Image (cartoon, rainbow, N blue to C red; front, side, top):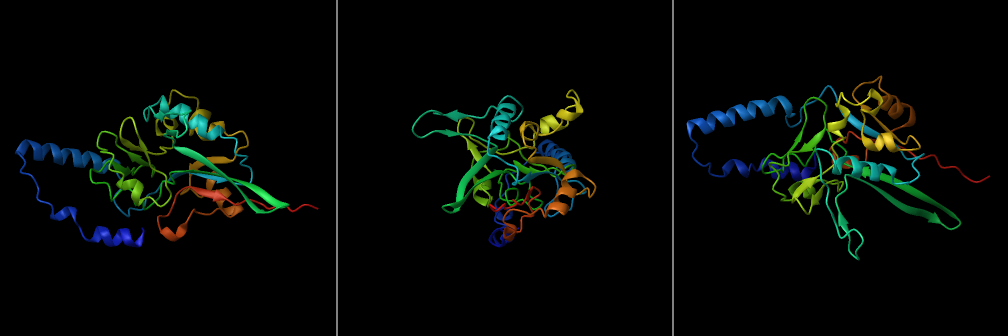
Length: 256
């Protein structure tokens, strides 16, 4: 985890806050809630047997925005939505997106190239957004490593956005809660869908196959093989968050 965040958490500021008196019934309910949460939530620093993630091939991403629009459509109408769009056609538009594609040019003319870089929550193995959350709304699932936000507990304080070094958290202006990529958790386990559709919407929509989805802890999975064979890498490893999502490098083709 990020060094300064480790130091901050060592201070145990919340542990010194005075606790409000609780009735016996409230203590019992709180204990039961914690036990239920422990079965779902991963402990800080816990090594998980399974970690679902995206592997993005930068060599074939064409920046078409299909992943962005399909993500928006699925999640704004699903359990994570609605996702607000304030003044979408105004001079200063704002909106909530779980996935964005950044595009820029590099090099010096005439040897220039256009780079498309999709980015969303990386579902870190040691996510700094989780321990800073004062209400426990941010958590990492024990079963599959997906990092989620419990909207019922989120107060929109933006601490998680402040802690995330990747800028993957966004405040929904209408609901005043923090939002992020869920890896379409309401879709990938939906047995009502055909097996081929039980994957994130962005993966299904990508026309070039630039987005792969699977368990990066399974050495025989498609994503693990792609990482090994193509030299997959993590984004900003110096932050020590151990991002689950990986990128496959671009292959530079020089003109003949």
